[in-house]
Each structure stands twice: as C-alpha cells, then as structure tokens.
Length: 347
Image 1 (cartoon, rainbow, N blue to C red):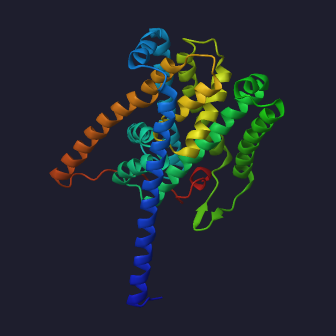
Image 2 (cartoon, rainbow, N blue to C red):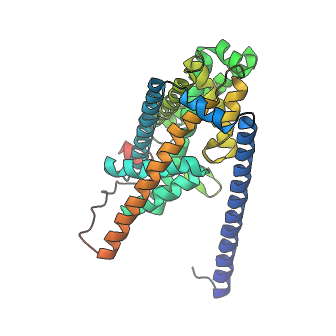
C-alpha cells in the first residue's frame, strides 16, 4: 500500500510536532523537578551553617563510612546483574564485562541527572547499539530494568512493613490498619506480577505498546535482585544513621522505601532534597544532616564522579576506533529464536 506524497509529508510533520512537544514537556518537567529538589534541600539545610555541616560529616566514624561505602558498591554490582538479566530477557545477551561497564556508567549518571529511565536509557542505547543491539532490544532491556526497580521496591516495602508493623507505624506515624494495608498492597503487587509471569502467555497491550511477561524464573530473579538492591542501599543509609542514632535497620528500610516512592513520583534528579526531607520528617528526634550528606556523597556523588571519568574514557576509545576505520568486526550476540522478553528464556 502506497501513500500520496502529501499524506507522507503530513504524517512526518505530525511525528515531528509530537516529538517537539514531548521534548518541551520533558524540559519543563526537569526544570520543575530541579526547582522542587532545590527548595526541599534548602528547607532541610537552612538551619545549619557550612561549618556545622562539615563538622557533622567529619564526626562520623571511619568504620561506619567504610561499611556504608561497601554496601553502596554492592548495590551498584547488583544493578549490573539486573542489566545482565535484562539483556537475557530481551534475547540479546552480552559478555558481563560489557554489561557491567554500560550499566555502571548509565546508572551512576542517571541517578544524579534525574528522569533515570530516560537518561540512563539514552546512555545504555549508546553502548548497546555499538555492540549489535537494535533500538527495540534496548527498549525491552530498559523496560525490564524499570519493572525490576518497581517490583523490588514493593518487595522490600512489604518485608519492612509486615515483619515489624509496629515499628513501621512508629516511624511513619500511620495507624496499624494503614500500615498493614500498605504492606499487603506491596505484597499483593509482587504476587500479582509473579502470577502473571506464571500463567499469562499473551502479550499485555496498552495503546501502541505490547509487553510480553517473562517466564516465572526470570520474574522471580527480577523480584529478588530488585529487593536485594534496595536492601543494600538501605543498609548503606543505615550505617551512616547508626553513627548518630540507634535506629534499627527495618525502620531505615521503611523510611527509604517511602523516600524512593517520593523520588519516583517527583523525578527530582538524584532525589536531591526529597530523600533528605523524608528522612528528617520521619526521624525528627535525630540530627541526621551529617549522615545524609555522607550517604549522598557515597551513593550518588562518588559514583557520579567515577561514572563521568569512565564515560569520558570509553567515549575517547570509541572515537579513536572510529577514526582508525573499520577493523575486524565485533562478534554480535547469536540471535535467539525470538527477541521478545520471556520467550528467549523459555526456549
């Protein structure tokens, strides 16, 4: 079927207008998110001088900082595993060393840039397409990672709330019924996802999108890795908070789940101000400014610096290879019988 030149031009103009409007709304959302984060951060730190902030960080024990750094490193290692799993789900596996490089750079930058799904996805696209993946394959992998974040957060939230509902109620200020309802909702969401993976075989369609559920073993691995990642980040935060308070791990995990839910809603880059405001609000009797600054440096700013260096180095290598001209072709992954998530693992 052919289209008249006028129809083709009109459709091209419509696509261009839609893309332009989407870029404008993305810019507006980013500016509003940054402004919100700046306001929340200012409100949180307004009562402290620069000297007080520096001294509060210097007062933290080195052992606590080292343990927190170890948990942060373990979290990023876990995130590379999620990317490796995502490429297998898309039917386009790559060697782990490549996946680890792309995942660390994209996530260390994406966590601080904001709109992590878009920013880290764009960096993943730059790496993975150079290594033989198509646009659809990268989109499936990015979607898989996003779903893993969601189910992992719900799984940790369910454990933190249901294992000790009284503690969660004390931290959040909610009644016992509301706490149990929130925990059961999180557990129900995870159970529903696993149930769909076990029994639903048809693609799920939403407007122009079609998503196929992964097989149950892959979905269970998603839930496990996602929950372990957030558990490790919570452990990082718990270590620095333990330097100034006897707050328990499950209480910190509950607070962190709430803070991350707020970050996902606001899209504030790196959760700047949001995480701090939530923690200060939920733990009002503790001076947590020093630990929070240390946590942000260990989990966000430190990896961001390493990621920028690694990104610059890999870009230099890519450009040097491009300037050298075509060389021996890089072996691309052997295509599976299908590239949709789930079926590759079932075959």
